Structure formats: structure tokens, C-alpha cells
Image (cartoon, rainbow, N blue to C red; front, side, top):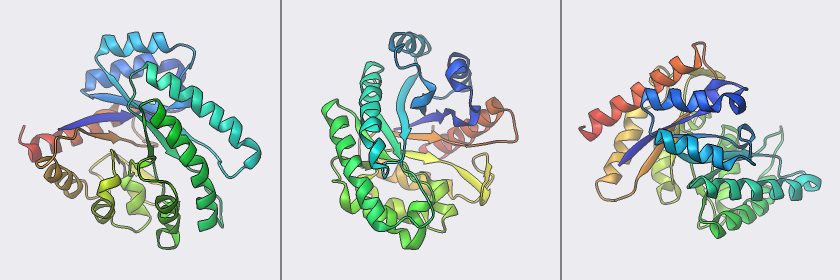
Length: 264
């Protein structure tokens, strides 16, 4: 089974105070679920979000966090913040915590290994509360023959950190997203579908370089042998269109693949 969610990033920076309108728009478009960054929530208003999403019959599938876990002076503060976000997530019936790393020029394999210590701790925190930690990549983990991604996979136990591959960033890094899925499928929990026309040229799904049909067909092939429910999130960092129009185009494209490839 394939479900379609929207990462709200396309709606800009004022998501925190327009979340109600965004959620209603996404429900009207047809999305099954929603995900957004932790900074876009009032963490002391869990009941409000429970009521809103319950009334809309919308599932909050993931909350996305990020940070610089190489800054040893701030790591404990960041971990405390993650603890609060995990508690909030559980109240909303969220399944996943999505995590992104931090990049700077000259980042080494050893730096990724150092980050992995914090990611392992976060993975344990998630597991203790019934959540699954998933790492969301950008293009930088695939520099230098993907040494960053390899370091993370080698240094964080698989049972404590799964993957939510952003296939657009993988492709823009010059790596085959389909091959990455095949090579790491046992660790992949969900997917982010993002499209590019070129470096830093975000575009609506199906109008750029990413082979979504091949990716979707591959996942559907797995589904014929499994009972797993897959979540695919449409994620578009920026658009020249109005956010709701970009979100509608992205859903229409994904729903079209779902009907064509799954046959209904």
C-alpha cells in the first residue's frame, strides 16, 4: 500500500501560524498525510493539533529535525530539544522522526562518525518511545564517493536509524537513486520525492531529472511480496508557483503514478 504525504516546506517560513489553513488545503487536495519541521509547531499545544488533524482525518507521519551535532557545546541542548519533540510526536500518534545533518566545506568521514554518536543516542530515545528515527539526506552525504553516507550507515546501528532517502538530492549529487534504494532497501523506511531541473533548481514532480516512475515501480514490486505500508512525501523546497498550486501538481503526479502502476 502506498500513501502520499506533503512536506510543508513549499509553503514558506510562516507555517507555524498558518498550519491550520495548510492542513485543510492539503486535505482538500487529497493528501493522506502531512509532515513538517519541528520549528513549525507550538510544542505546548499538542491537544490543538490532535483535534485539528483528527477532524481532518489527516495523519502526521513525521516531524523533521536538524542541527549541528558536531558542535560539542550545543549537543546536549539539542538532545534535550529532541527529547521534547519526541514526547510531542507521541501525543500526535506520529510514527517517525526524520533527521537531517549539517554540512560545512571540508567535512570528513571522521566528522560523520562523530555525528553518528549523537544519532545513535537519538535512535535509542526514539525506540524507547515507539518512534523510528530515519535519516534524511541532502547531496553532501554523497560527495567523495558517498563517504558521508557510508560512514553514517557504518556507525549507527541499523536497528536505531533507518533511512528516508531524498531521491532528488541523490540524483543531483550524481548518484543513481534507484541503485541506492536497491543497495539499501533493508534500511529504507519511507521516501521523499523531490525533483530538480538542475543544481539548486527545484521543480514540481515529474518536470525534472528524477526517474520517479522507475522508483515507484520498484517499490510497488516490493509491495507485492510484503504487507508494508509505504509513505512517500512530496517535498519541494521552493516553487515559482503559489504553494498550494505546487502542492496540487505534486499530488496529482504522485496519485497518477499510484493509479497507473498499482492499477487503481
